[in-house]
Amino acid sequence: MNAIQWAEAQRRQAELDALTAQLADDEAKKEHDLSAACDDCALDRDQVPEPETDLTRKPTPRHRPAPRRRSRGR
Image 1 (cartoon, rainbow, N blue to C red):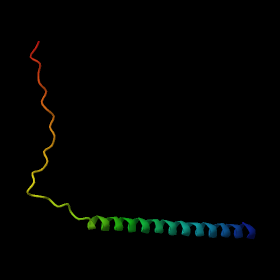
Image 2: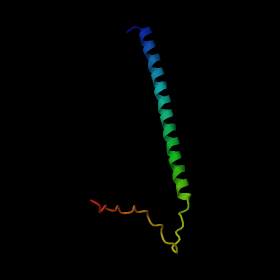
Image 3: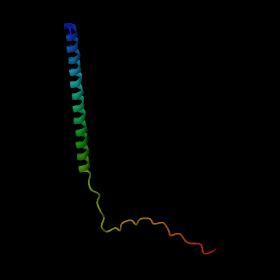
Image 4: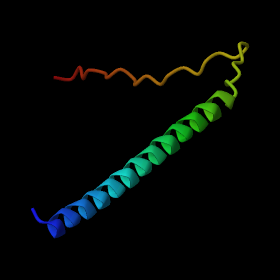
């Protein structure tokens, strides 16, 4: 390998190192943003008041389908 090839290899390695560092920074930022969004969501969820239960009211009965009647004709 001559001096020109060595210099070219060094330049390419420096470009690769810079791109790798940029990628790592971008990934760290995305991870931080995702973590912050999860924290905000959890905080919002914790601030939602629990629904009040009225113990004097009967719960609404669930709808049951009417039983099918058999035909006595045949």
